[in-house]
Image (cartoon, rainbow, N blue to C red; front, top):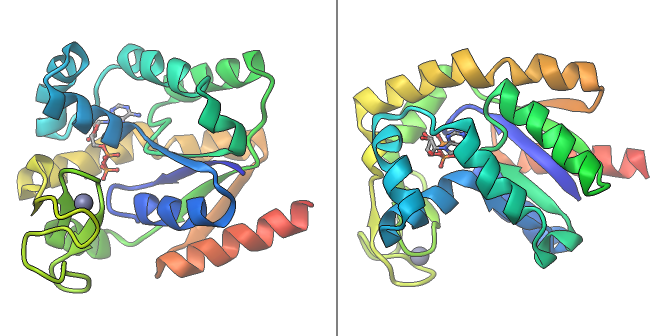
Length: 215
Ligand code: ADP
Ligand code: ZN
């Protein structure tokens, strides 16, 4: 399947994407993960992205399109992909449309994962992430078996730099201003599915029902 997962920070895009990859081998492509890996590795890309990320601002559209233009041409994308955290601005969505036309592909759907703001705030402040493999935990609902240590890979499980209260507030504002308008964009394109996401499983169910209906 080829999907875009839209939704505020903390809506559960990454969790949903990980569950979907297990269904049909589609690959999860998270621009946030790609950027965090670049920052950790200290590459040129990482240096360009670091300050904006730490503040909870967006990195430039040019930088993101450079990454995604390459990424979507890689072999593992043949099995399908779940775009997690991309596109995030109208210019990115426009550029993606051109890119997909160039490579002769079409999206199955764009899923808007809707979660109430207070739920999101609570989730983000209690979220912890493995810096090695990206696995996501929650100190209240899903802590690692051993505190601070990833169940999957043994890597360090920590609070992200951009998960301070100040950066979270900014990320939500940035989302409302720059990313929320994508809902209207994809509504016009005719492939938007809105899901009220109380649990990640309810999102998966809505997506599989829609994929079946499209067959
Ligand atoms: P979340 O969805 O939880 O906010 P991500 O891991 O998707 O977090 O992104 C973390 C940060 O990486 C963002 O706050 C932003 O600085 C940067 N980023 C990720 N994807 C994009 C994108 N498509 N456009 C611009 N910046 C991005
Ligand atoms: Zn891990």
